[in-house]
Length: 153
Ligand SMILES: CC(C)(COP(=O)(O)OP(=O)(O)OC[C@H]1O[C@@H](n2cnc3c(N)ncnc32)[C@H](O)[C@@H]1OP(=O)(O)O)[C@@H](O)C(=O)NCCC(=O)NCCS
Image 1 (cartoon, protein in one colour):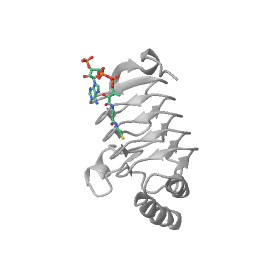
Image 2: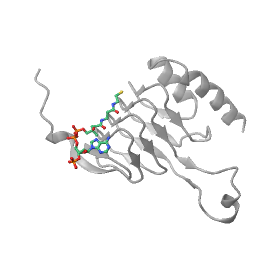
Image 3: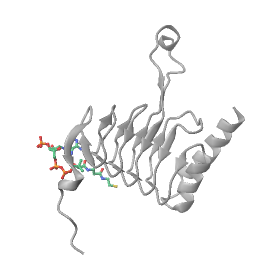
């Protein structure tokens, strides 16, 4: 319980800092596994109840503004949760280099593969393959990053 309160305090500070190494480091100290050069935009919300290790953000992944990660869908205050098994808790992993578009919601247990892209406002309820582009509600495959033209250097 003390750990969760500590996580809440650190996370609250982190959420008010512009995207930076410090912001990512503070998220890392608030119970989330955060890799190198991770970009966490303003308005991102992580509904893990401030528990440890329910979210892993691998190297160089990007969470766009207002992304919501929900590893723990646990309606604490609703009487239905006492009667029926409606809550779920499972780790979310955002793979290396993956890019989650603005306003997307990632549900419990989902792994977004390395280099995948999630469209704006998607609701992702199952795993996304590496380099897949997934969008919509619920999110489905709409393309593959590797089919895009290469950037000319
Ligand atoms: C998902 C995304 C990357 C796809 O881009 P794209 O590869 O150029 O794809 P297209 O625009 O060619 O669309 C491909 C199909 O996916 C659909 N699609 C694309 N984005 C979608 C979205 N966000 N929600 C639902 N469907 C979407 C298109 O309607 C199209 O469907 P169709 O083939 O039936 O016509 C882009 O649309 C997107 O949502 N980017 C996120 C931007 C963002 O949040 N940026 C934050 C910056 S901080």
